[in-house]
Image (cartoon, rainbow, N blue to C red; front, side, top):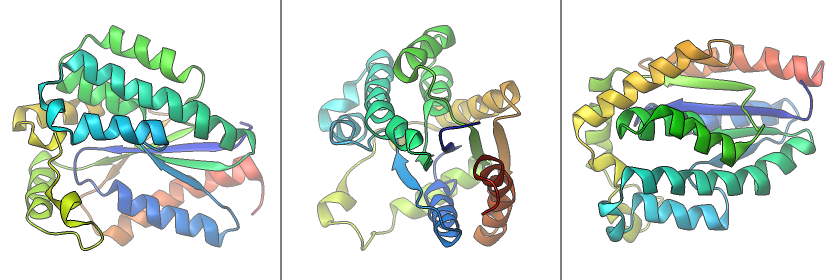
Amino acid sequence: MSGGLFITFEGTECSGKSTQIKILAEKLKNSGFNPVCIREPGGTPIGEEIRYILKHSKNGFGMTPETELLLMNASRAQIVREVIRPALAEKKIVICDRFYDSSVAYQGFGRGLNLDDVYKIIDFAVGDTRPHLTLLLDLPLEVSLKRKQIRDSQVNPEKTNQQNKLLDRFEQSDISFFKRVHEGFRFIATKEPDRIKIIDANREIEIIAKEVWEIVFPLVKKVYGNC
């Protein structure tokens, strides 16, 4: 393995990805690294515009699954070429909150699009830029939905009033949609067990973070030597 290290986090809603990415990034900084942390969709000026259309625009609520898949991968194609590849070329560690596995789970399983078509579009968008490691934070559906209800009822002081009022189009989907997404992630994990590691996300934050570090740090040592 050469040219940096590419790690992705996946999971259903409220699985704790953002929290675990922050903890991992801090641990890597304490070990002498300066990880590049990004999110999907988004992560570039163009990608953030697409993210708004996909998630928050009032006109987006009539979006077809095919349009959703193409927009997701348009944002992905941009971030791969603008951020991920240059960072990996500089031998940096890149940590991404979601990547193409989410398209398989959300647009393939969730929206019911043909998986062969989904994979073809993903292949065109990312080329040979693939994660070295994917951490799937697995959360029971009922826990995910309960956390989502709690989150939706709270106001985030770090956001503006306008941001707190924004509806997320994906989060308005019904329970059956999220059930299919959850099943999709499980399916993906069985297809690539060497890359995708399933982590029980229904535990204390510190316990999850410890397991994440136990998986990530040996890979960091393998790529960068003793650190």
